[in-house]
Image (cartoon, rainbow, N blue to C red; front, top):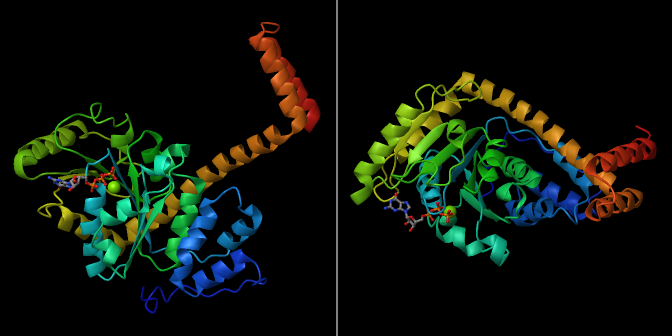
Length: 346
Ligand SMILES: Nc1nc2c(ncn2[C@@H]2O[C@H](COP(=O)(O)OP(=O)(O)OP(=O)(O)O)[C@@H](O)[C@H]2O)c(=O)[nH]1
Ligand SMILES: [Mg+2]
């Protein structure tokens, strides 16, 4: 990849201990040596070997890229997410933007990462020097979106990518988790069936900034138009208060004939120029960050407590006594509560 033009506005920062792997990788990132990206992203994804506080310090020192745009693209398996990202991404590149795609690969749960899969589904982007595709490991937590996905977004932004796209397959929690770390949420749906048949969870549709009815071509073109107007009617009164876009856009698209892609590109370019949009985006990011802080603190507390051997012993004892009918849940809860109060002095 040509690194010369990548985000000249991002300031340089040095780390004090160049011996450690983390320091070296972050130094390479900040000097825009993009060959460090795969290794660096693996490092943040890999929670077990992660030096949390050192990594957090390094992440905290990264410059903020306020101009970037984070887009989640979600939808049922096979709806055409990767195909759309390929065309949409190429359009954005033609407008002098650099694109990073973090694809949450649904098959990797079984194959431990079928990297070729998503690259071949984005044939144009995978050849472009202005694009970077990262298939992420899909562990079951939140349908593949993990705390580290946000870190990966930040890293890609510092590397100079203007648009960061998260592709997630619609498996319950994943859309919500993806929407919580992005600025805009695109929901893709196939022509025809309603939400329930597509396995789209209630509430997900209302979260979308863009609803894209794909495969509006050939035999399914008319059906796609009908599906789009059904959604328009259904969402007529939907709330938009926590969204960056002024209204939910519902459109048809086809990655075969390219319809809808120019509209999406124009919208994104427009958003990038709008001051109100940019201001709202930064406020939204801070709100998201505060929610993540609450969640991560809860996780941390839980981890710290459950790691204590004394807690584990007490917990197992009480659990077994419930199984053996020696205690009921009320007594057991009282005992564990007393134990926690005494042990942690809280
Ligand atoms: N007719 C038609 N087929 C499409 C369209 N977009 C994608 N496809 C086809 O649908 C299939 C799935 O496309 P992908 O882009 O891989 O879909 P995806 O949503 O990324 O799939 P997963 O990542 O596996 O969930 C491929 O065979 C595509 O050629 C479209 O607009 N029209
Ligand atoms: Mg895909």
